[in-house]
Amino acid sequence: MASEPSTPYYNDRGRDIKKYGICDRFRCGDVSCYLGESISFSKENGSLQSYFSVPPIPNLNFILVGKGEPGPDCGQIIASFICDNPDCGKVHYSINHCDRKECPLCYGRWLAGETNSIVERILSEEAKKKHQGKRLVHIIVSINEEDYPVTHKELNAVIRDVYKYVKSKGVLGGVMIIHPFRATDYAKKKAREAGKKTWEWIREQENPKIYYRYSPHFHLICFVDWLEPPEAGEKFIYKTKTDGSGHVINLLNKGEKAVKSLIAYLLSHTGALEDDDGRLHSERWFGTCSYNQLKVEKEEEEGYEGELHCKVCGEILVSKWTWFRRWYEAVQYGDIDKPQYWNEIKWALFGEGPGPPPSEEDKKKYLI
Image 1 (cartoon, rainbow, N blue to C red):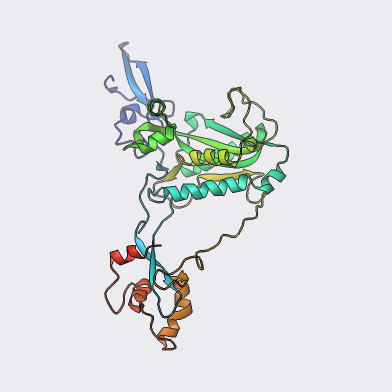
Image 2: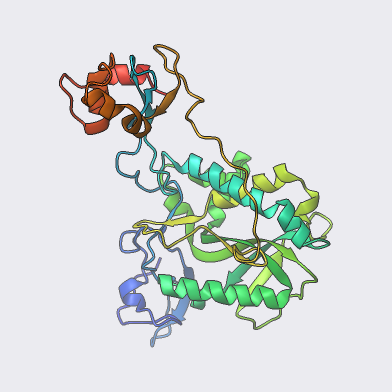
């Protein structure tokens, strides 16, 4: 690459190329290195110089899901259940999970849960009945680089405009999955050589950040009527996923397994905020599928209590706080004798007890 210009030059967004244009992957922050275009320009003496026109660095601090830091105490063994037999009271343990999408330990749990939640709603009988005779399609909406959002407020404004745009084209409603990044051509090439999907390959790399760039776009799994084609000069451009013959794919004809696979892959490379405060949701329901327009009855999930059994006496296990409400005062007031594992119960409930704490080996032995 030629040397950096000696005088300030600006790209079309007013960024000082002299100050920001040479990507050194340190000033760029944590969202890849924002690889930009190599542009040539003529200096006063007529010689050609090159620089990188770098997209603006957002203050959103996006990271790829599953590539952040674990939450507090995530992965630690914690006391969760106590035997409901008042003579026993053996404490049982589980692995603590923060369930944050950026957490490398909980990413898989988050992905499975979000995938199932989306598929159950989009393919629910209520959704199909509400959109009888309509198609369920996969649409990708892209924006111009000069309109890339760099703040959370700008991102929300873009999302609102996308809703209006797709509605004007014939989209009725569905779920939007936000993608902050696009893979580099090099990553796509290496993934093809490895026989893997692009983002599957990227996630396996030791330093995945260098294989994608900031380029926000939106994937919609949505019910549609007749779709108006995109036109030149519009703020957004969209394309609909088609089959090998160029026909728009109706996901309702593909089956639940295919839809679940698609949703899981799309969620696998959405983004999280490095300092997440809960404002950014990877998926957003809109239009006729928004929560105020589509009511879906959920089956009640069965809880743990009554399903798990003590590894000592075989009695059922209950959560430690259920045990506290049920038995603790009776023991304290002498209504019943202290359970065999009273010391361990005290450690489980209050972090201290009359004797030494349970060993890590014992915790692992009674891990649920």
